Amino acid sequence: MEIKDKRVVLTGAAGGMGSILARELVKLGANLAMVDANAKALDAMHAELPDSHAIAGDLSSAAGCTVVADQCLEKLGGIDLLINLAGINSFAAYEDENPEKIELMLHVNLLAPMWLARAFLPVMQKNNAGRIVNVGSIFGSIGFAYFAVYSASKFGLRGFSEALRREVADTNIKVTYIAPRAVKTPMNSDALMRMGEATGMNMDAPEDVVKKIIAAINNNRKDIYFGFPEALFVNINVMFPRLVDKALAAQNRIARAFAKGEK
Ligand SMILES: NC(=O)c1ccc[n+]([C@@H]2O[C@H](COP(=O)([O-])OP(=O)(O)OC[C@H]3O[C@@H](n4cnc5c(N)ncnc54)[C@H](OP(=O)(O)O)[C@@H]3O)[C@@H](O)[C@H]2O)c1
Image (cartoon, protein in one colour):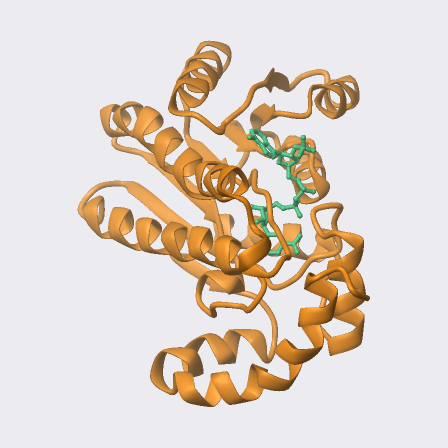
């Protein structure tokens, strides 16, 4: 899909990757609606990109998503491309996760993309055109210790993307699932960054990931998994999960102390 003149809704537009992606989309000629819960950061983005639309909203409920979707359609007069990028994570031992945080993470990472896709799909169906891009994670294919809730949310998002892609396969509506490995953004806590260093976790620059997201949209990719060896591990995990259990065991032991706040 060529981005020029397309009506684009980008969630998480004020975040680490979102702000870079928003600038690129505008540079490429998109008519952009930027959505984010962080009103202050969103205002700053709007000041920088005054021709775009800024829609502050909390996507953690179905009602919040409906309000945001209505505002986007009003501002843009329709939609060609939805990019579900907003997300939250948690690096913690599962016994330390609280029920509210579990619920919030599933709402923002999994249900919000589903609610928004449901709100925009009829508009795309009317035009028989459009693309929905869901930003997941390598952790949506490899369940990672101390990211149990995050992994669950991204596994769900990958399944939803695959099912919806197959459901609309006979139309001109396309679904893309994007799975970055770790990226250097404010999403990752200090403890996570220290654990990443201690275990040799590969971390990409957000600018590089954004370039690949744009390329995936331009090239009509169905899905994309980032990085070596992570992308290879995604396939090994499907066929030989016990091998991945073994490969990650030592790393998981190191990660525990960081996840428990002991390091
Ligand atoms: N960073 C990584 O290592 C990594 C790796 C793989 C995949 N990803 C995925 O990439 C996406 C973007 O991540 P990022 O690193 O750019 O994260 P980020 O820097 O934390 O940005 C996320 C943005 O989403 C916003 N947001 C959070 N909850 C929201 C809600 N309820 N309603 C509306 N907006 C909300 C955040 O606002 P606040 O500032 O108010 O929280 C923030 O501006 C996420 O889906 C993430 O899971 C990230």
